[in-house]
Length: 83
Image (cartoon, rainbow, N blue to C red; front, top):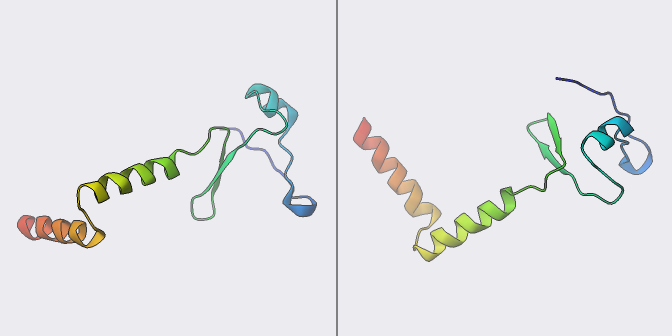
């Protein structure tokens, strides 16, 4: 895995090296997704699908009449069965 050292400039600006921008077809105005994994940052040229997925799951659970409490109770019941 390659690594690149970057410096944060004024206003939090980080410059992605030209070789990487060219390699991944990144251009001015493109959006990137930054994921914070507990202090390890992952920068992806792909838009995050996490928000859309969580919204879809929440809508489905609501439609099914599920609540956080009912899901936690079902989880606890399953744990109790398994001892």
